[in-house]
View 1 (spheres, rainbow, N blue to C red):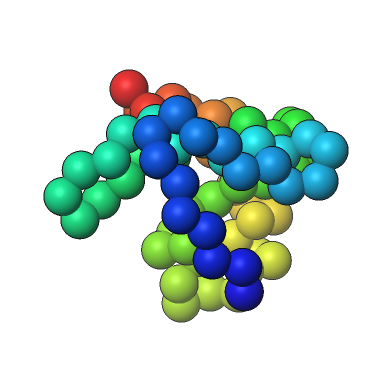
View 2: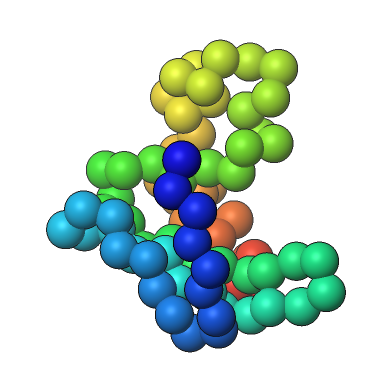
Length: 74
């Protein structure tokens, strides 16, 4: 596992087309934004507890994921 320290507005680049940006930091929590191509599904870990990860990813639509990310970043 790679462990990084980032400050607000700094980014982490994964491959050529995935960017994770630190949007806000606070006491005990941070807000991040994930910019990835539509064919790559991004889902919070707690949404897939209790069921297999592949089943959760298959059942989640891109629209649901985009709406969840938009709501979290607002």
